[in-house]
Length: 232
Image 1: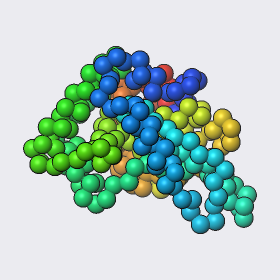
Image 2: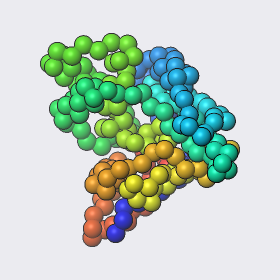
Image 3: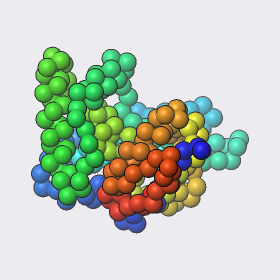
Image 4: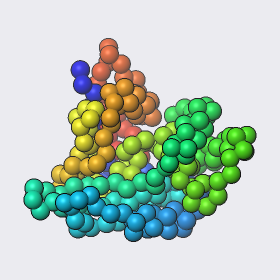
């Protein structure tokens, strides 16, 4: 059976961001910094050959920064939704993987989300110190973003979950582009793909766990409410 999922996002302006922003303790990632980093990322983006940009906007919170680009291909008469995330070089990807291996991660109770983020940041800082890795400014935020999205947040679909313009997110299997329903452009193919079946399987299991549910071969389907009120 091929693994797939569909998320119907809660109809409100900011998705997961609303939960985080309400927390008075979640101050460890300065929102002004991530806003500026998102805008810089957006300005540096260049569409692939054959595509031109019709709209762009930043997606950010205290924990996330990325940019969204709506592209159009005149030859095929189609629009696409492109996610632009902060890039990592090979050394930085290895640092992210090494740090995550050191973390004792488990699903977060949304009522404790600020404490979990603060605890995670402190652990990350201690691990970086132990590895004698010095990262500051944008370099630090880039590492932290990729660590947070792979643990507490929603891995590859994190920017989608934070985009207030989306209503649905659908994945029909590995190596198949994820589709979204955009409030302005309706159904759009994205550049977000789960490359391996094992990666997608692991993601869906973790997603179910975030909702307090269990999924297995014996129980291969789940209908649940996510911490932000969205449905899977």
